[in-house]
Amino acid sequence: MIRVVIVEDEMLVRIGMKMCIEEYDPSMTVDRAFASAEEALDYFSMETADVLVTDIRLTGVSGLDLIREIRGKNPHMVIIILSCYEDFAYAKEAISLGVDSYVLKHEIGEEDLPKLIMEQYRQKYPQNAGNVWESMVESRRQEQQNFGELFLVGMFVLRR
Image 1: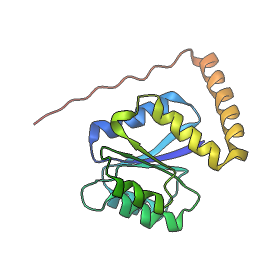
Image 2 (image 1 turned 135 degrees about the horizontal axis):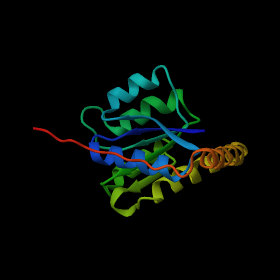
Image 3 (image 1 turned 180 degrees about the vertical axis):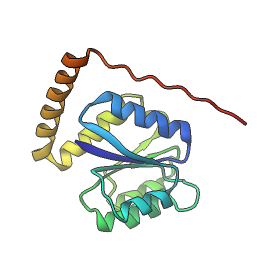
């Protein structure tokens, strides 16, 4: 199982990313999705993940500051930045922090993010990627045989 943590301050983007990742591949799960870097730092003080997907500009602590804090304690983690900003200074700093990928939000499609996560994970952990994939595909086949096709249904109620 590839464990993913998302840090994104826009609620609908955060929810959409979570759904895209979990629907795309049964070998990936979103452990947590946070609205702020502070929440993520609290989580990472006691937990870890295989992949971090974060925005750069967050309310309070920035995504780059989050990466700076996490990278020292979790050098193994795949880190992907999703940003709206094409600012070269951001990209340059991200590279210096050892980010695995820097992607612009407006250039990535629904299935591109999970593919990118899987690609980056396989590059970093080639010995684990095949085993995770094969076991999860078999698990998904068993699930479908036992229960039929699964559907995810969601509803939002927005109130003032």
